[in-house]
Length: 350
Image (cartoon, rainbow, N blue to C red; front, side, top):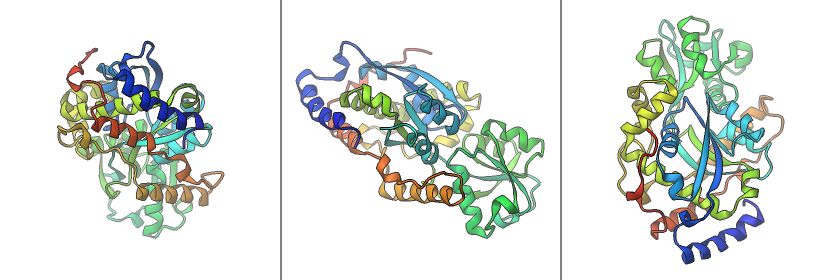
């Protein structure tokens, strides 16, 4: 659980909410500095909705926003105290959370496609054809170890010996493939779709759906300095933003296209992969942000793989970092009508 302060605070918050109505009545908004990834569609669109609408204000919150190319640098910013959230896939979220006492992971943000893309002139058709070839990927992501596990399972038992593997920012992948500096990359949408659309590469292996989910962690210092009610309002704001994005996806794509510098058409293909954003959801209670037991078990396997390959200094019990209690409480209150008026949502910045 979060901290004793939060366990007690949740009960007190429930009583207060019943007495005073919506949290937006608070005199002083709770503040956050939110980091998000400029090249990760799905979650990126929801962040843009928070940034450009009054949803945070309706929930008694205010935020500054910072962007990062992928989860590794974002996690380091959280460790340095520069942002209050840890928004990434499981491995980078956990790497950062383990270094920030009291940090917790509360919900899933979105589904994301990832895989291994090879150059268009690559003549192989299976993962074992990567033996002796060069592959790049950002080591501090979850797509990298998950792709490595797939390569090992396919039959290349020592990929770091049998292949040339390069640690490379996702922002550099397109130019690296165009310049034939590498044979393959571990990548995700929208960069993945961009390479396919531009005929720069082709898919050699695509991960099963559900293997790469965005996760929302909140840092220990923010949790310690804020109440359970503040956390509750943030979770409600995210649910509202996901609902609004689902019903206004073209607008969200336009915003994120400016941030990512990618075409809205490419972004649409990425969000079509997400369970909440693929089609409009009219009932906010249908928004699914759950992280399942199976998700956590899969994450444990990934972190064990990193430890066994000496890419993680100590073995990690990942389940201890997850707490779905606050999400369930927020969902319960939303079902009871305890949330700001959805009709009051409006765009405040173009």
